[in-house]
Image 1 (tube, rainbow, N blue to C red):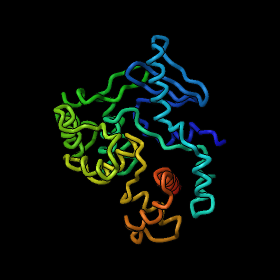
Image 2 (cartoon, rainbow, N blue to C red; image 1 turned 60 degrees about the vertical axis):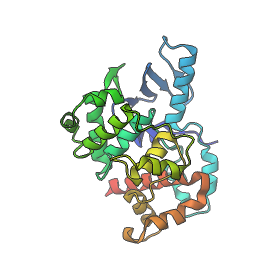
Image 3 (cartoon, rainbow, N blue to C red; image 1 turned 45 degrees about the vertical axis):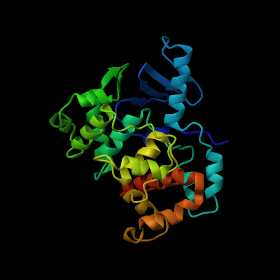
Image 4 (cartoon, rainbow, N blue to C red; image 1 turned 90 degrees about the vertical axis):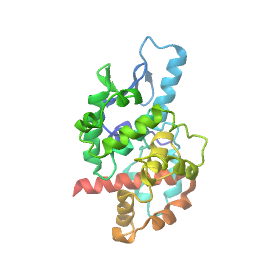
Length: 272
């Protein structure tokens, strides 16, 4: 059985100040900082049994601990993607501990490099988050609602500050709900796109990162570029239709495969 690799997983996470990895993964949650070392969980002494169970479930969700990597690797072993199993062995798809956090972090990534987006997200957390146990709690809708667009722009969010403010107000006012677990993917995408600041790419990425839906952003440059590299083609030759034709046959593993391809693209881009 393939063991998860916490170092690889945390490398692909957004270093936003709400977690750290020092051999143990530590995550700030509403009731304290919770840890996981690959085998054991670490909880604040003050937590009740029910809170510990909830905290463990959150960590399992964030780190994708229930992912059957053996099955995933067997699905790609005779394909062009077989090398990814060795390159990223033990890597699961990380997710956000909170749905609101997922949406805000995805909006913050719109139309900019992943590296710059990571810095702006970390700035936003410092600006509006609450410190807890040496880490920060990601800001709640109420925290952001109390800030002006100009204040949000201090995190170098640019025009995305207006989108973040808009969706936050819609959540506070009850117009927008992120409790979309029971919706089919296409229905959820149509619903989300009704709101300012949420396009197809944002909706798809939110559903994957915030709800662990089996979906991927087919128009994502990193995904298209990664596929182009693997198939030795030019990026402009890879359209959304091509991405879907390649990934859809992998069924329940298509989202994980898309993530691995994006990670491969980032890795090769970093090498220059």
